[in-house]
Image (cartoon, one colour):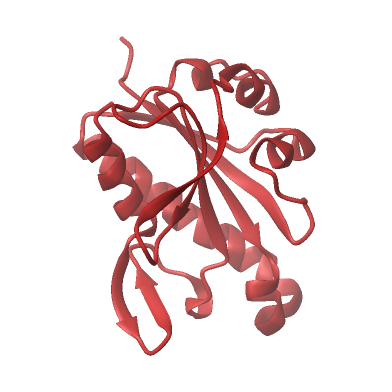
Length: 170
């Protein structure tokens, strides 16, 4: 996959569209403008980007390198053996930093976090379709394995959703 296509997908899912004071508005809505969802990537085959785990930073629109290597088998194992991860060029791994919403919405924060993730996932599907790419959203995964792959604790920050993206086969 060309790096430009990945860039377009990142912008569609978490790109900054406006600034209001310290708040950066993004392409996907978020309850209360709190943006508790973070984007991580398992890059398997993107031109010019070394295979590994990355964290997307919307405010600077760049990727923070976290872990080197082809972790396709590990990510597929975390995703209950769903093998499309092993063929995808990139897998989006979304986490929630729960306290970003919980301080305001208490128990209802969990509902809003999942709604936010749904909006982000929808934007990924729309952008990928426009670019001729296929997407398979993944909601079934082993929490602890997925959290360990990207190095989050599962309490303060936890994986909530994944999506494999690549050239459609068929």
